Image 1 (tube, rainbow, N blue to C red):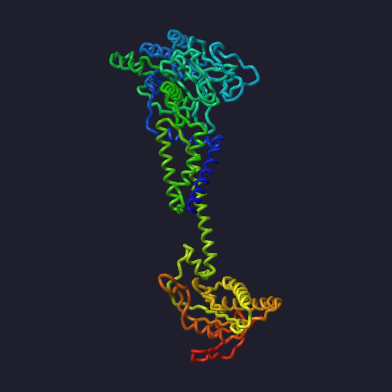
Image 2: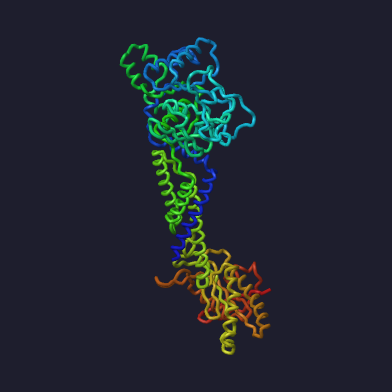
Length: 635
């Protein structure tokens, strides 16, 4: 029953700690750290497929070398657009911002003409400022896109906390093309993990570059698009059926990074397109055309050292790769799936409960093993789930495991300490405390079986005890004897003695074992002095109650004796034996009430530290030669 109650306590404790971390998760306090673990999982997982409808056309190092200088002349962009049209590209998006007119007006004219020939193009623009929040109270300049071209999607935009664009910077000319904003809002650590799908501006929503590409390439009308802040953007009646894109309260989409530029295969640069036309290699031209036909091509800068590099969850990648990834995610429905807050909270609490049940009444090392195994298992589970685009909570679960393990090991330690204290408290009444502490303290070795050691042996006895018990009432005998032992026993522990036994009214104590004590003789004598003083106090109290006084005689001897555990396999007694023990008992038998007699050996060890007086030599029973004795003077 006790084990079940303890197991229940562990489960409740684990669940409570899980509840604390669940609350932290719900509040968003752990989001920034959790994001780091999501980044790591995206880098660990196996390669993810990219939509076959998306092609990447990078403006790379070869293009800079082939076409003379940077920035590449806009006429080159126009020629490449014509080549893309010739391959049968379904839609082209430029992740290149043409904000200022060229020095050569003819270059702008060429690009403008190429775009007007192929209106299935989206151009990029940006806002000078873009950040989440409510609209500024002042009226901003009119958007360069006609207001009627951007829908509100049935929302009160002014009440939203979507990312807001301030002061839009348009391309160099207004063309019959689509337009998408390229601003992103990095997280606090500077990493781009989310992109806005819409920007709020002057009471209307304007799509991002990636979303505009999807809308235009799939030919969607405004009525096919619905926006639910904090939940999803829904695109209906598309060639892919209904597309659901999860967004947060700020209208931002969590990017499911599939990899660097290498995941977009086949991918091309301008020089590849140029070669397909100019080389005269029909097979190569056909190969390029087959790879691009009916696809969405995203064009962007991919050269070494370009300024359009984004710090993302998987590292530094060109900005066009971010846009291409978002387009691919939307077309394939490959979104990162974060569990609802309540489901995360439930998982975290259950993790704490399971850890508590798993640890049971574990020892410290076993508890650590359980913690490591459960942590490793959850870590593997989160990576496997990430391969399926499901993001499980890591930081709160690991935090629950760690804190719950510490708490439970602390609980175990406290329980063990309580048990030890209870054992020492109970058994300390029957076993000498120094011996008992050695037995229950794992950091100390148990007393040796037997050993030869110089110890100081102490005996005390109440003078006239037998005669007194015959004339006293039994209740008085029991009461005064218990009071006597209760008063004397604390001095034994205080001076480092080991209580051997009570023999009727006799107390036997030895000093110097089991723990070594270089001053065992001095400690024995000082204890005897304290006991004689205590007897004076006891007699004063007894006198007030009408009892006759009692007096004790004390004998102390220092000698080499055998000390250790004596007995059988079923019962052992830690005691001392030898001639020295008998001699100490004989000395005590010659001590008058209120006197302390010590042997010559004991006197040699304490003479300079306590006051003594010579005593007549003792003739002791069973010992042929007289024994030199000294009396300790009681101040």
